[in-house]
Amino acid sequence: MTLKMHGAMTAAALGDKLGTTAEAARQQLVRLGEDGLVAAESRPAGRGRPTQRWALTEAAQARFPDTHAALTVELLDSIRTALGEDALNRVIARRETETRRTYEAAMRDCSQLNERVAALAAMRTAEGYMAEWQEREDGSLLLTENHCPICAAASACQGFCRAELQVFKSVLGPSVAIDRAEHIVSGGRRCTYIIKEA
Image (cartoon, rainbow, N blue to C red):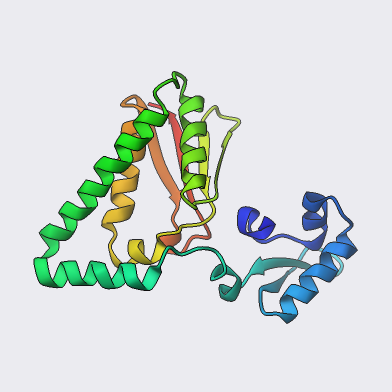
């Protein structure tokens, strides 16, 4: 879970996060490596031994929920084939409308941008996105989604990602600029959004 939330890290950094020693973390990583769930990558670190950073493998990524991926992709293909691209776009638009309505209701009492982003992160986490947010030094906010429970659907139809970004822009307000910095569907480890008052 820690590697999923924070990405590749050394045994020492993992130990710090877990409140244990680097050696205890390394022993757990070796066991997970034997099970094919993590892999180490050596990187030069100046003088001395290279640094080993541990990351989740595809087998480990598959252990996180994917909301019935195969069925979803099949249904999307069926809609596209039987009813056409326009029908698929209408389905996505309907989902976008419902999601926007739900998020707006949950944010009704949030007047500040950071309150709205915190509420958005909480809702996205409840939906399986493992979301978190933080305020950055420049005053912007960073929304991070460490998992995408609809990744298979989003890969099959980019309209889902476009719709989600539109929902974020709508519920966070017209004076807010949102830029997607990382994108799982485009090969990123996670989806990140930089949010600031326009």
